Image (cartoon, rainbow, N blue to C red; front, side):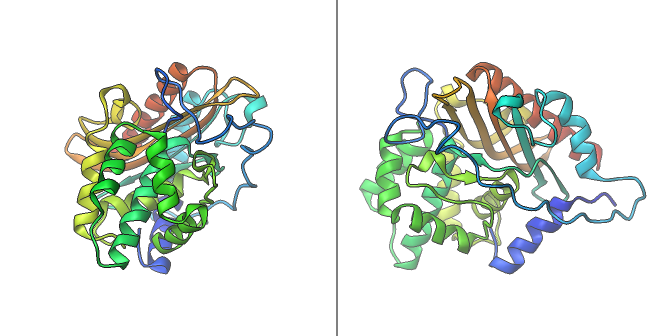
Length: 308
């Protein structure tokens, strides 16, 4: 049997907690973390100190370690990063977490925290749906209109409005505690929310899994929006499969001119469904960042396919 620290860590989070974007105002394809000037990579964007790595799980098959296999597959593609550990001044940085949605094996490469950019919009909508459930109500027509615009078109004004509706950063943090996210810290400027690739898998389990704080109707609604993102956002984890539901995030840094490029979602490849999060920073251009994220996504799915 092939195992990984990720499989154990995600399962542990779900048991303990009860279960489980990118754009500025769009001008062409350039994005922003939210209201206000773009954050400096050396100030507000600085990630908190990384948490401890997940405890290793001993494989029953000697010498087989999915995390190690993922590292071997991804590190040549990561643009100079080592385990997702290098900073902006030391080259690009990439982390990926991938999980077989049916059978459960998964793997993680890199444990650093990253700014979410617009992938946090999935989290914002999940929090709104959870709060609506708590009050025994459906989303209002106005909330639904903003949710569609926020997810399908990555609209920042809609995200800012819904972030206010859920109670700002405090409201998002409260929802994430219930979802089981332990390494995600919301920011008032929502695009600067900090997270890890492994924590984004916990969020994806909330959206796509049945053991979730969200009802089936809430999950189906959010999944449908992620399957219908606008054509100019058909990139990222979608490169790893033939069918997909996703949310991407992209954000240039004013201090360096480098890019954060992120992608999260569900992909189906060769009849198997995977949940995956690829987070990156320090990319020279948006285009090169997208290419790197897509190559990492393909490599990650390949690792789990070979493990079957």
